[in-house]
Structures are given as structure tokens and as C-alpha cells.
Image (tube, rainbow, N blue to C red; front, side, top):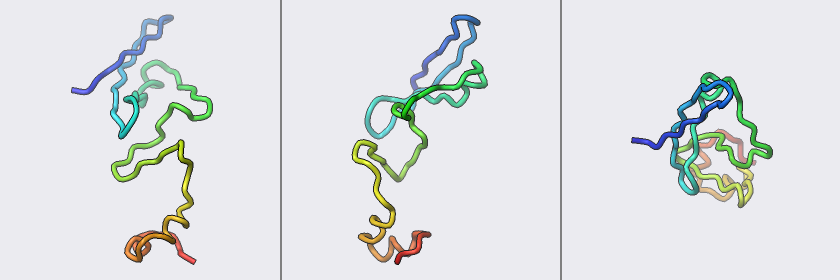
Length: 90
């Protein structure tokens, strides 16, 4: 059973149930998919600091380390990896 949190609007008494999701590292995150539907609000995260934008079973992005250019990754990869990529290699 997954961990759940309840968020309550104190002015209306309405609540939203938020499911916790575990990531690769770091603290759990809260699935806020139904927050707007349940409470009529959005979230605000200046700088996109504490927001996960996607879930992936095959990749891990380290935001602290910065981003890598896909062309650099593919140019140092094997011919098989390049063959399965959709990007043209110059």
C-alpha cells in the first residue's frame, strides 16, 4: 500500500488525497494530478526546483550535474546505439 497525504482547504473544508511516489533518489514526491479537479487550484514552484516533470523507467537526469547535449552522447556511443537513435549524426 502506498503512502497517502491529505491536503485540506481550510476555507472550504474540501480535501484532496495525494499519493506518494518513490523516486530513484531523494524524498518521495506527491502525485498532484487531481489537485485542480479536487480543490480548484494549481501549484506554484518558482524555478521548477521541487517539481518532477516526468517519470521514466530507463533514464535518470541529475539536475545538479547539468544537461548533456544528445549529439555529444551519441557521438561517443556504439554504432548500435546510434542506429536506434532518430537523430542524424554528422
